[in-house]
Image (cartoon, rainbow, N blue to C red; front, top):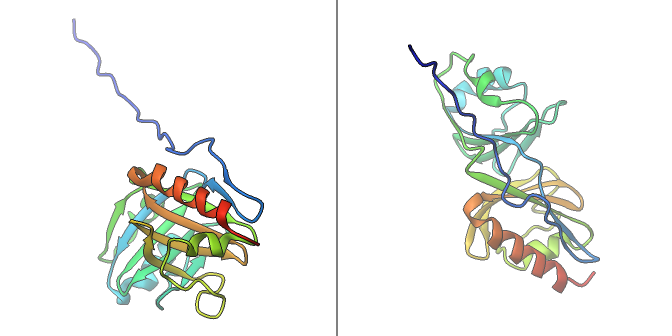
Length: 187
């Protein structure tokens, strides 16, 4: 008698689920689970890729774009973007695009924290050498930089909210660092 094949499905376990931190001036909470794609392509193919993704890929340093449905496209380099979507998988949309590109699903590799409040900027600057002031890092700005001892991508979503993306293996470090920095922040 032949046995039928069984399939296994991996469930995404968020490394910081349920944790909250911060203080009166800044809160530190895990971002919602999201699909993430590391996208590499020639700038000449950006228009076709943008059409497939439903969000215009930014072409300027530190720029970002957000679709009406919440999909984020973050500029990381002249031919590199980080695509983040909390509801739909960008890989499915990119599979339909005929333009030459490299798309790697990094959803399970990355995690993110949201740092918000009047002291959010000071909290991040406690361990980040990047100037996050309004004149050089306005709402919508994005940068690959360092936080303490880890590489991060920081996206400024609003006047008082930042999204910090990092490799999930650094989750405990990133949360601990930002939680302590928030407690030291005077607002």
